[in-house]
Image 1: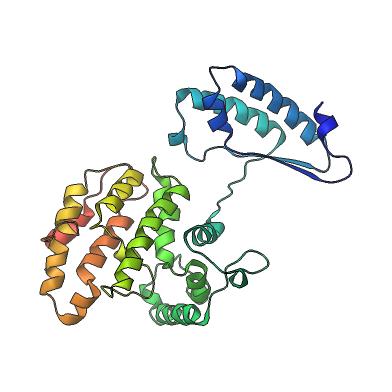
Image 2: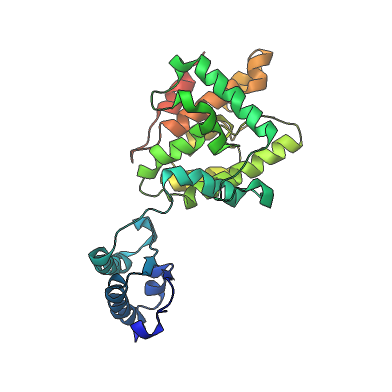
Length: 297
């Protein structure tokens, strides 16, 4: 029956999206068992055809599955591993393109034939200026950053600073509750909204969206932040030492500093960067932020 509905004169691509979602919703009715048998037959047939490709999407995080889902997941995975291979659709090189395409509207002429975003002259000038600074201060740049290709890096993540996406890709993805791509999109959507409002009112104007500009004073953003972090015990430290309260320590230090530091919001930005960089790759609370703030002059 499966071979009958497959086309004989052209290639065939079969997409099965949100497999575990369907299984979870139909487990009690018995349809999930039927799906298991069908998928077993379908993979057998597809693997024997030269021009048929079967693509099945499943959650990338176990946090999205309950115990019964995980048991079924292992059963389905055994079927697919027997005839196919796993592919991470949001690989690191593609994440920035996915994020920019989802968060911003682009005109048709701004998208290249291969689906890449083409930046305007002003954006390229900004990226070039940042790249020039990085090359001039390469001794202050982390070793993993490709200094000689800095301009390409900035263009690939514009309007975000490369470090914004890097902290999610290299550190936060190791956190148990972090949802790769989906989690990044939610945080950045709230982030972009806040930045847009601030630029519109001329409250602040940064050439790129950097880690230090994260709107920690926004309770909705903080809630999303701690949800992905999987830990909310830093709430008090963040609102007291960085932002969230009018008398927050970093905000007070900026207000008492010279005009250049005050305008740049330097204390707050440094503390925010430390918060992001020191809370990935482990599941325990890191108190580096509070220690740095309390010891700062």
